[in-house]
Image (cartoon, rainbow, N blue to C red; front, side, top):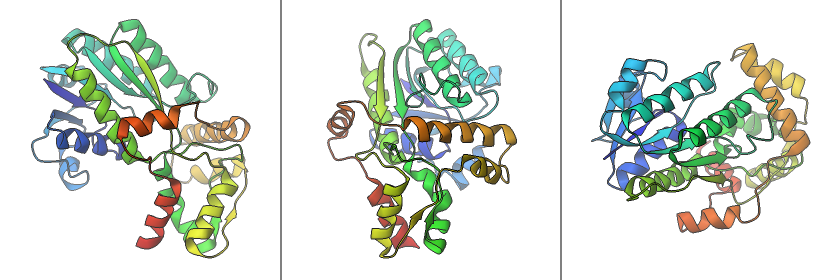
Length: 293
């Protein structure tokens, strides 16, 4: 049977598709712009690329034909919750049995943060619809910091206001591989498996000072942490994203500062066993970025 991947041209989706193809799966990728699948995402040969949108009911009905398992990934957009509920209802209507959903860690804790609360609502919908499902709850993506690498490299400041309590940052390549493993496990099951939630974390829990110190060691020169001014963070984000999204990100940063984003006991060990290798670290990321600069 076929596994349908939404968000297939994004950072996580591309990795999920690649990992599934490497494991011999039949993969269908739902994309808004098929040209992007070739020119930007470079999806592997043999992937069935279909044009569609999570609010386009007709395109979804067509995409779900012959699909046994769904990887559901929604971008942070104003109608993210509606997109997910439409997709889940249509998936059930089409006879899709298995779902792997990309949520976020602490979705049930950071309830004042719009995109966290929305993902928690989707989790509850998945349960209510009775899917055989794995809910993946990633922490902060290490790869988010590609957006600030020039500030670090050129000015010696790590500017992301992530607080000091610590975030269990994870590499998107690890997310993609774990998602593929879970999709194939669900897809191969002879009967529905119970719903599971898996926290996706990295090997280290790092605060702003810790990340700055790693950069300093990798670069061989001092790197300072820029501090926790979330109001300035919001204003900076408004230069290249809508005000509602910048405010959403500010609220998230404030919860980073007050709560952190730590793994639960056994999370790292569980993921290491699943991957059969160590998780990629922030130091690995910083070393790779510095080497390519």
